[in-house]
Image (cartoon, rainbow, N blue to C red):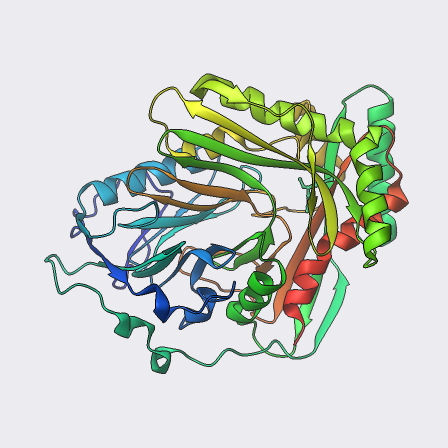
Length: 452
Ligand SMILES: C=C(O[C@@H]1C=C(C(=O)O)C=C[C@H]1O)C(=O)O
């Protein structure tokens, strides 16, 4: 394991691989109730509290968690990236001294993670020093220190606007193709369709990237504020430079119950309500989209089976209405047979057929063969978990990576460069030109987020 400069944070690489470092001081964690009236009512309330650009976030409709500072940062890689991160966090949290006066999901120590789609490249888990959370009419603040003894309860002073650096707009933005330009990507989709028609597989999800270059270094808070307000029903997230507003919940585990929102099957919105209503009706009856959707639901239900005693899968999907697109959606719920952490469930579900394909192995191989792009943390699990393992994991869609990725010691890339990602489920009946238009629609949230 490469030992990294720890500064005043516990920093590890390849978590779970032991080295000769001395035992770290236990984390000291305090959660205190916060008067919810201190937060405004809007969907941007929590993200607006972030005092620095590199905070973490997981918010939806103004509820959720934001955090800043780092008490712990883990970087893991390889097929064991989920387990290694889970083990290292468990060890760090097992010795933590915790005083939690609120006792809700998301209180006490919490870790935020963003994992790669494939086995290669760095995945990151961060335990912030300060976390502010809200759930309905309850709000709280948690501090995580390395001090070794319990200090005073955290107070609302932490939210004082005087501590916040001003949010910087990205300024002018120019866009260029990423790994493939539009024509080349349309060819990739055509190859995917041909391979499916030859009988090699049923579905493959193919993605592309677009590179934005901004006038000013990107301040993630600018993006988060726009995403949280513009896409309030999505989960707006930020972890170590990976930012987005995903409508797809991979797994929430809370008190023995697992929930997953599966999406697959998409039409663009026109902006005209009558036309969109007609499109929604078409989507709900489109055999191509229903087929795509069925593969995704099946993959989730099958992956949950070993962990769950009863899984409830609604017979037909509903249409999820977002500002840019309409999706076929199914909420799967299940009861855990025994205690399993949310991260373990997310790892077991990943990659679902919504972002990889069917059968999984054949789809993954075809992606590696023809997509021609490093997905990095796009389409990987992103979310948070608490000391008891409960938590929420989304799929990092409608997302972008600021500054070209992760380095164990922090971002090193150009903060004026942002990679935006979008992908589409491809089945035998797919039309490559239509998939290109669909991918454009899926890039809309991040383009909107980057607008000055
Ligand atoms: C792959 C993406 O989205 C996924 C693919 C969908 C589809 O092909 O219809 C719909 C929702 C997501 O599961 C993306 O947004 O990049």
